[in-house]
Image (tube, rainbow over all chains, first blue to last red; front, side, top):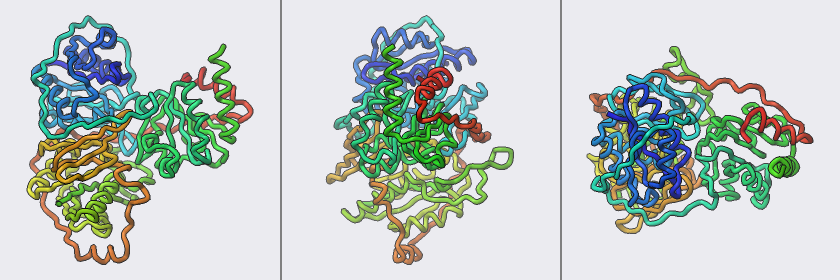
Length: 322
Length: 249
């Protein structure tokens, strides 16, 4: 038996959420006296070393397949076939778009239980009990797996990761496992202009109607760029077409949990909070001292975005220049 | 074309969440229940397809009779028929097996469901239905077009959109973008009157599915500590706090 991990890559590089998955897998493996096996599709020495650094014992590489252009069901079949061959006890997957699209199929085909949106290390190891996001971050739920085998998906940027330097071996993945079970074909991909995916971003700068118009987003982008963060927006802003839907964070948009969330000119309706309240630190900048968002913030500034944001940019530049 | 929209009934988005019985039960006191917002985008899309190409729309739910007012509302918005599979077992895999059984028996071309429900956030049901029926899944779908026998879908991926093509039947796990928020339908008086004569069928759930996971308890997030206010003339202090105290810059 083993702990099987799927390490997701983006443009050939391991995602931070993959370090979390490997670190989590290593933790579980230690508790259960098992080894970890990690599936990866971009087999560079740098990636192997990172997987080893966070605790992979065996690396199963699929070099000839481009992860970004392989269909979800084919990917699920590869992971599932490995799980059967290697007798996986638990499979660790990140709760990214990709992870969400494949986890149910793997669980069903592998006849394992499925627990998604996990936010902390297991409360109990055997049977496994884990804490998960629920009610759009307004609460947490604890689930126990009733099966011997389970698929666990981890909410990115929730659990963290630590080094567990391990001696590792690299083996070639079995390509005969890459079969398709349905007739879905990928035609093309359209990537967002921003380099940083919101669900992965450690820092997010977000703005609302208080910015008065789409032409005023330059300073938001500049601030985000300076702190290596992503840009987001409130629902009204995306509904009015000021910013693309892909930037809308909130209940019906994307749920994020960065280390730092800066909300500029957003009042903080409960539906907006549902998408961002898992952020570790929240800064709210608003002209209205009664904006409800201040109640959920760690740091607040009552002031005009058009004065405060340029000052923030100036202060951060000062520090970066010195 | 036969379309099914799987509907989950959830607490209103403004609900304050509380638990009872030692944090093991969701406290429904004072809660208004609504159609899961992600499912509502799907239902509206189904109605647009019906208007353009002609179709029968069935809304399908697994749950108790407390869901019937929401199903009636879906009929008032424009669904032709509602079916509720009667059970109190709402574990994701069991729900999916019950949904899949009905879907298989009734040969639907398009299977819509929201990408996740806003209460338990599991996001598992669309993928389970696709796996059980062995048909394609369009997860996080933000756009969909029908070209003859082919369905083109636009699915949200982590840093963009993936455009795919598929044959029918397909599971479409939708969200905003499939239709716009302003396009969502509000039941008209005529719709409400017509809904009264539309069928709401109740069938018994298959109960011998074994649950694969068990909900042990809930927990509320820790109260936020007081917000530290910083004078807008002292932005350097904010940056210093973010660097040295919060350690996020």
